[in-house]
Image (cartoon, rainbow, N blue to C red; front, top):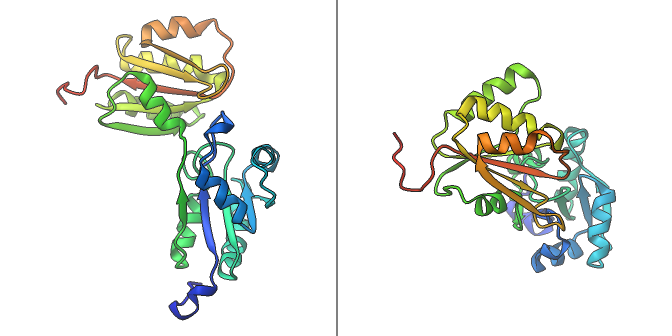
Length: 241
């Protein structure tokens, strides 16, 4: 499937393009230019992506690519790149592959001799790390935790044992439960931060101990995208012991 060197010039390009996590003004010049040049833009949700494209007068053809069809569409997508098309993958927000579809496509592209071009941009992960006020010299990203109780409990225990800051994505409907689970596993004195609606109108950052945050989140109806950061360390110089 790879493009042989003698015909490589006829091969297209596969772009993974980061998009804003809320504020559409966070789109980069490079990302806009790449999307304007592409023959096809594959999107996790074409309805949401249409809003972004309209904002920047991008008229590229849209097709769907998401977690439910990625296995079926990946061979087709790569074949189109090999046929000479410029193709971009975008997700609803942030960077493909980071808690979003993209890994399968990149893996199969590399196997086929296609080198994906990554167009970086804003990330809720890096935003949350910077906004949390917690040590950022070392951190672990756990993404969305399992929903099933057994696997979730095992993951929570793993997180509680980490000696570095931990970043977690969570649904607003399970946020209060997550804070309680972390409090019970890591202790009420462990420090944490909740970042809600990053870069959006109702952006909010809550900081405190897990004991404090569990009380604050208990009676509140949460809405919007949420990121939680937990750390048993309070400074970069804290001993690993």
